[in-house]
Length: 598
Image (cartoon, rainbow, N blue to C red):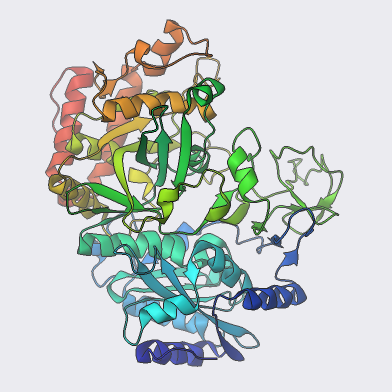
């Protein structure tokens, strides 16, 4: 039943209903009664499965179509009047063409279905960070996920009032045909259309679509930043808590880092980790000129394979109840399993493809048949996280003292280094890259450039995005120091040199000391690096030889790296900020001792 006095919203819902032709329209209010009804309907339709309520209370299972298991970046478009506004790293389509193509796919797509009207808020309602949206969808799975990931329902309609601004989000599963799938962003219209997909990253339109692609555009226009970053607090034995934001491409352990457990020696000293967010940060300058950040989400949408009590015990505790598991193995007792789980492999079950599964199964090519998809997911309320920071609820956000960039590099990047100043730090972020793992699309070991981990998510020309970073730095009273880390360096035998996981806190502790000016650092061509005696190695048998390997700069590797960076920058032509090229030239001179033309 319609419960809004917002004329524009009501008009838009009616127009979209005429296009999609649902059998009925349901306005979601966010109540527990509504949730129960949605679960009953989803169960009856086979869209979701209620799991074993004794072992996993409040938990649900969902399986997406086999061609619909990840974000489809090649079908994701930024639709602006001028192609230059989208830039060379985005797929572009004109709004006219995009609307025409999508309307043909949406036409009648909800016949026989219900259109759910989902009013939602990113960020706390009433705060200066808050953005409101309304998603129309024919997926119960989407509604149940949006309940976890956003504030949704009556509160949002009340905040919208009679004429509040909102992002118009339209989604239909349609026929789930990948040939008829589009994820379209219209920054100039504050609109998102997604059709032909049921996978979270393509259809939870408050998440990457609004909170990053549209929000990055809004942030540039309004003077703030939307970033693909975790936010975490590190409490030292003194009780002082310092907050950092960190950006990592996929498969680099972002969620694990946001919830890490300190190594025993640090725990005994009194170190604690406080989680504010694991994926998205909205950052604004306060009246004093300090950078403050909020997590605009209310839940986690995390990857499951490899998640266990060693890699991420806090995640394991978070999704024990009231969570949705997607594309994992469904066991006979209606519990779930995935590769890398603590429990041994079950003897049978139904895998992510809906097939009867047993351990050791292979396909016709002799490859193992997986129980869970490599990108299988959990959706859980953030309030269930054991390490949730009380500052998560502060509508003004937390003060950011350091920004950390990282990637997965086998040899090139050292364990950690610090940029000497903000422009050099922006260059460090602009040159981020990762080597692909077996779980990612592409060639194993291929280097993929991913500035600030935003290549898939920046809603406008990335050259302008770099400039926005540079200009924002000029407005800060005391810009946070910028660091780069690499937990994944390997030795000559292909083994990881650094232990990673909780031991990463040893590096974070050095970052805190540098941010507060407590200790000095050594100069290197890449930036400022730690003195070995300034990292606490208690409990680790790490030799000077190993230390040197973690910071070695191989000139032949760096020749290739610098060429690759320059080729990437060439994509932007004259739009690239001059200071980025200046920093590139300075680094070239520091590494090779020579001036080069750029």
